[in-house]
Length: 140
Length: 141
Image 1 (cartoon, rainbow over the protein chains, first blue to last red):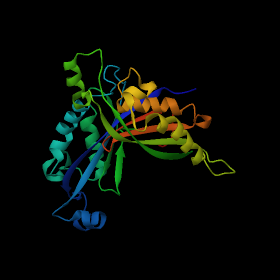
Image 2: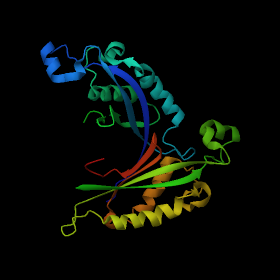
Image 3: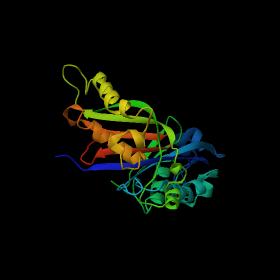
Image 4: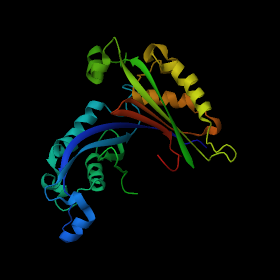
């Protein structure tokens, strides 16, 4: 039995931000041991690439799952504007208590984008560097 | 289950225009993509096949065979073509990434032995792509 044919739209965005990995629940020594260089008190930065995938019906009038201008405006307002050229733990309230690892960043961005009205968010994948990527697809 | 992916690239032109909408609505909905002369992209197509490797050959699908299918079904049809005017399967459709990916799926699915086509991913640019798959797929995305 063949399953239904599904289409997803994928879009990539970029922002640059600094972060410091440090947990208030750990001692200075433990923070240093666990996070290594990423525990540097002055922080450090990355060029993040955020890849989002949305599913939905293709509107026959436009041929699209969602108008890209609408999607870009939504992602810019909810993610790029508040995160780009910021210090994540100092300037994004969600990371005051939560360590800004890219795992947590994926989950935070998923929460910010899941209410997009025109299509269903399937997953958020973030490349922290060209060698590390993380993906979150919502609660299992 | 093992997933095998082959990538091919083609260049094609297209434009977005819905004759049911006014000229002004077309411009509003499609923006620059409504330019009547069209514009082009370097498309990258990733085709993923799922299966167990054959006990004798160790292959999920002979890559040579897959390469020939992609050449015959996709490259000859779409490479260096104007998608709106030269690809019959797209007639009366807006050639968005979503629609082109679905046309590619429909062309490939019956040609891949044992219905092993798992996913079609079509990049229109590095930052925009569409995925096509059946919802009974299991395992890796």
